[in-house]
Length: 255
Image (cartoon, rainbow, N blue to C red; front, side, top):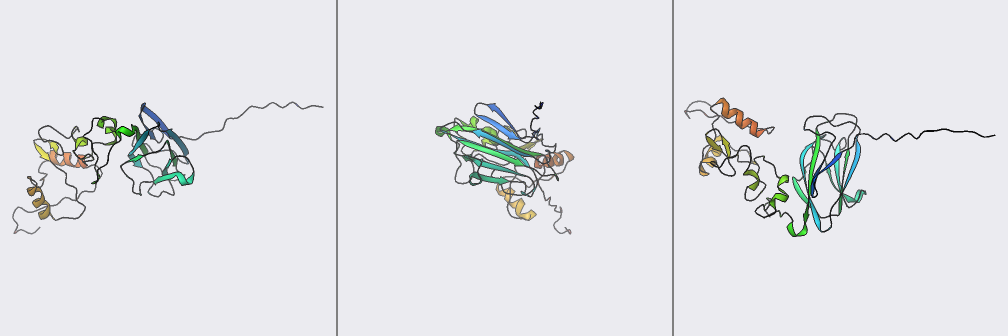
């Protein structure tokens, strides 16, 4: 007596995976599937990517886009160095948590783990990475900016975007942007016939104090008198929360 058994191997169904793309031998990016800044990522993801770092090199990492759940318990990006074990986890990132804009890792391998649940999804993340020889490592200065006045700046320039925020000590990251011009110079925004400068404040200031600060810097507090000026400034500021102050022409009139 014998039994004949015919069977077909059924492949394991693999769900959506995060993507890794190399743009050169020393740089690339990792992102959620089809990340375009708008399309939501799939539900119930549990995906890993491992990247080996060349010997005698460090890796520079930047999250150029991070839009996941505010609660890391729902959706999150995990960054590991040297292995996938819990003790190797360097960062757990979600939209509601602080994250460094740019940072360096001295490791032979880093791993990215992304998880999402079955509830709300967002536009995902994009992580840029680049490898740098120990003889040409990007240097962060004591005040938090980077030294970009080096011959190898082009090797890590992709980590700094045009965002009105000076990442380089010499403003090299803001010198060739759509809103800059030779007439206005680095650090200024060219709008129509005027040159504007965005002055970030960590404290609330009055209109009078803001006006005085601008005058001390050799300018004037902006007056959005035309539709074009309003459109340009609000477009540049993007999704920031902006408080617009008004003042009367005659200081004796009620405000």
